[in-house]
Length: 85
Image (cartoon, rainbow, N blue to C red):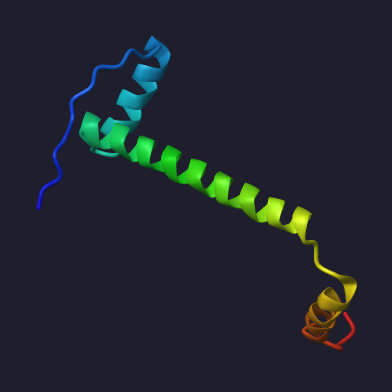
């Protein structure tokens, strides 16, 4: 099923418009495709930042204890080669 589209009008600084036009021609994209890709990337980055902030906030509220971290630290050390460089 095709998603319905909504037309919008936006104003861009001339330099930004020229750069978008140059890049979309280089990538052989329609203007709508180029803008849609940029907006999807922006929305995905925003969502990732929000998730990272929630993750960090969770650790602030309940940080790991040293006894929880030590086995992981030791496992990481065991992955190094015993060979001398």
